[in-house]
Image (cartoon, rainbow, N blue to C red):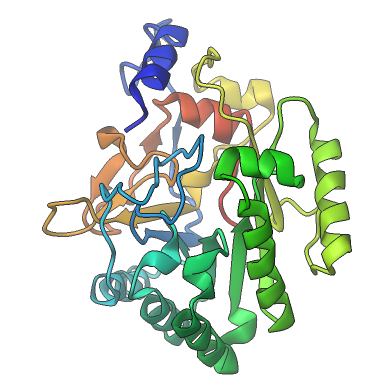
Length: 321
């Protein structure tokens, strides 16, 4: 679902790579990651969103319903399966699209909370979250589960100029209004942002720290799980393939990679049942669809995509806290 130009650039930059799931273009054994410590189960609530971002990795928009709305009835069997399998998952996370576009979002959160899980919601904190009915639902959940919920707000940059360049004029202001509402009602917040091409991570975190200080947001700018920063997505950059020898060369463990600790459930348009994917970043790559149950999706994941190298192994990306 990448747009045509970006897809063509990616293919050109990585010509001949990421073809065989087990062997790299150079004939070396491709690295894989086993599900060794399941901690987070993600649900994509649907790709519909109230805005269209310039570089959305999942192409969310007001018209993209490639991933349709999940329902509470579809979420609940997975919560039960976690317990049946004995997986040590502690966190249920919701992403989109914009999760609060989904009419069953409060119900899905409630199901996860009632089952004893922590809940993480990725949101832009804009109009869908700020509807009176949604606010009322969140405040009702907070009566019993306030400290079990965290809202990770998409703040693409600590400056209004660069945030709005990604999300549209006035988006920064509307997101801050949502964050202020969450702050004033005592909800836990985190932020997902990006490191702009012209700055390093230290500079980016300093910028976010200043933003939090200005608005009295109780968010740690230095903690990677509280201010999650991703590199800018440059689809023209050549990406190295990850081999089994890379772990020792990089002094890194497969357990550090996101697919060692999480899976994501989606519902494709026209599908009879949801599907379990290896990764939140690869919703449209069919080779990363692992089955319809968690048990079927418990096998190892071959790192056969540029995102595996750029964002997870080399970039250290993680979508969980």
